[in-house]
Image 1 (cartoon, rainbow, N blue to C red):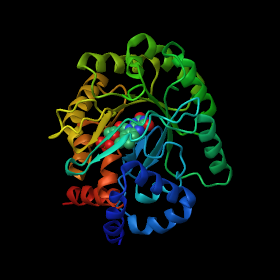
Image 2 (image 1 turned 30 degrees about the horizontal axis):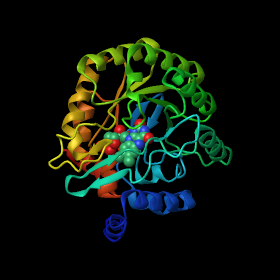
Image 3 (image 1 turned 45 degrees about the vertical axis):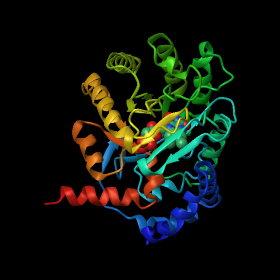
Length: 341
Ligand SMILES: Cc1cc2nc3c(=O)[nH]c(=O)nc-3n(C[C@H](O)[C@H](O)[C@H](O)COP(=O)(O)O)c2cc1C
């Protein structure tokens, strides 16, 4: 049924430019997230694969990666697709429009996306208000909802720690976990915040403001092995609860044709590179800090591969765009069938 709906919906969405399709989808889901969730849920039932993350028992280790629902407009909808946890954001302390359009490109043949959105979002205060409203009305999902936070463009790099901490303070009572995003390629200088001194300041500020809310650190795949080791070590010492590896890449040699668009690349061609970087993060962690794997996941085998390698959970974004709302059910069912004798 979900497949039949997707067979109708995909040609329509893919006839629009990527951001228009995204906007249309999000505004539809955001208009009635609980109703649409109630319709989708029975079509997406899937075998449970319980996992523990930040003290929560998740029905599945597969989570929604940041960036799809930046402002959290459809939070009650996503669990209906079968996700075990949801990450909204990136939000910043100041609301901001992001980069000029066009800024999101589908590479359909390669099942890849290039984006240079630049943290377009309504700000962390608006997200906090939306989340409080959901909680107050008893509409909070039964799966954890994390808030991914980044630096506002107007904030100087040297003032980044306070910008991150402002968002963390606003969201501390509502978010189930935080992700510190210092790895987007689309805010000038942001990735330099992965260096030891600024990273230490940001993590200390966020962990202080988070008031016990579990906090993860999201890393770029373009870091060297040594830089990943240093960041993981620092995160562990600071008291970070998990590493998310990886964000999008600035590499283009992974594509068979380079469309000459700046930004971060995600989707199928990212997989071999992200897989390699996740392995480095796992080695650096040496079991001391959980690793959540993300980057190019589109099959149950890849999910299983990452879990067997030691990831506590995984996230995805791009494959949902190409495969549609039945994807998570399929991944969970295929994973279950492969595990059954
Ligand atoms: C259009 C788009 C926007 C994104 N925005 C964010 C973001 O705001 N914050 C973030 O941490 N990651 C963002 N990401 C990165 C994803 O969360 C994920 O790390 C990356 O896409 C790799 O996973 P995938 O290959 O499954 O998409 C974005 C990805 C895409 C495609």
